[in-house]
Length: 223
Image (cartoon, rainbow, N blue to C red; front, side):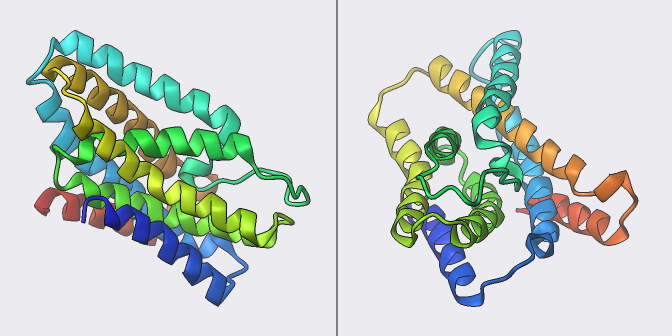
């Protein structure tokens, strides 16, 4: 299930968009806000305490900051697709390689901590579904050929399981694994906080989104 759930989450999201053909991505903002809160809370509750058991705290802090910087760098190429924004030319029919490569690196890294943190599979899954939905809307509404769109989604779907498999193939020391996990924590911190900051249009108070965010945190706590 560790390998299957992320794949099904992405592929079924694509099929859902293909069948329903929604025109407005704003309808998925509540789901995105929930995913950001849920992922952030799981990272704090599950990953952050455990990673400090295996290495020097300051070293872990350095890798967390490197993860944040890495995600900022990747977003120069993805244009923020990891947190629900796709700012690419919809009239371009070429395969969006830069978007694909940046999302693939992000998704590959997501798979590493899943093997040792059972509940993180749910955080990653809930994070991937709204992203896959928004990506699918963009791909299907753009001039990219349908077979290229399917290829993009299929390859994107297998990247997280590929990261999980890779983490089991190499006999890493506890310090190396802690460093990679800390890097992923930094990536998650950046992604989830940006989602939460952007979940309120114009920074206006929105009771429904606040309740959704609180609900995501509470669910993660009791998971």
